[in-house]
Length: 370
Image (cartoon, rainbow, N blue to C red; front, side, top):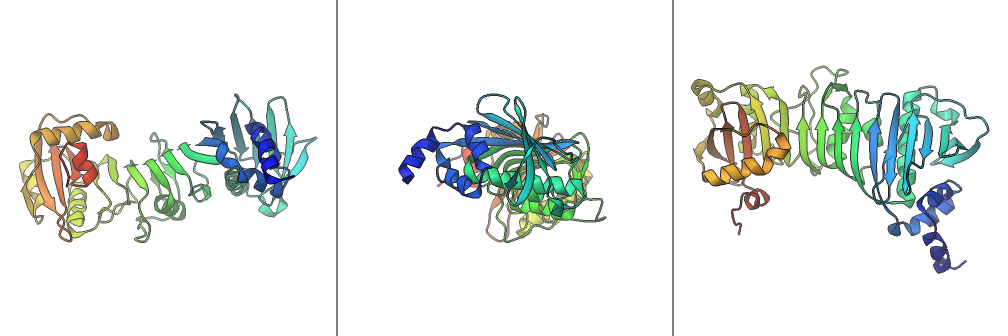
């Protein structure tokens, strides 16, 4: 049939119909991909203790994925949920199909399609197998759906090895979050991939790297920061002289005075330059250790007015959730390499706020820029 006729037919297909047809062959999946712009969706990813889930929605989709089996549920119109459990099992009475080179079983129930990996090449490591299937499902969906955004990607305490590296770097994630109630273990490769490659409005990390004692993340200078706001709970892997690249930075757990001093010294020296907004909790400052904090750092009287300082604190309070300070002390520091100015605000002798004088920050506080 002429392409224009094929387009007319495909445009009449619903989301579920396109999904099921995408499994029939690579050629048909590619054909669906030619007309994916008219089917805009979003996804959510949820990592649980026993499965990975992906929910795909039109206009909002959520993806639920597990490791070696996939349950596809049509929960509401224009919404599908994929569950990929970590444990493999055999589905009787199912048919086989191929997803990105892997053989899976598909069996249909009243509202569920269950896909189970039966590819012997993946071996007996069910967790590793799950991560392989997780990545394949994401790539398969991306071939025929116009995925506009990933609204959310949440993890519980379980972070399977290789999970971060299976995420699709082409998505712009609304939020990637590890639950802050407990520390999740990861490895240097996964953490580096996440921080170097993901595009996210918010990245919230409460992770440790027990497999590499003393490990400190080193960012890739060739990678451009694509994280708007990074919230760190456990910071054992953080190098304070060279913070992860993010426009906004919040370290939730109290840091030491020397670590705060390192952040400021490094910024003046030209490092930590991606940070435009910073929020930090420190030991309670006395007059003596306040002098120690700024010793060796050339400071100036701040050029921000009291109204502008208040505007900055009010405008950013939803990011850090720290108590609004009843009293503040502010000084300015200047970066040596380009003369960029930053205002360091001490609130109630405990919280430290850093505002770099970027154009976006100056607009935020109501100061006109050239």
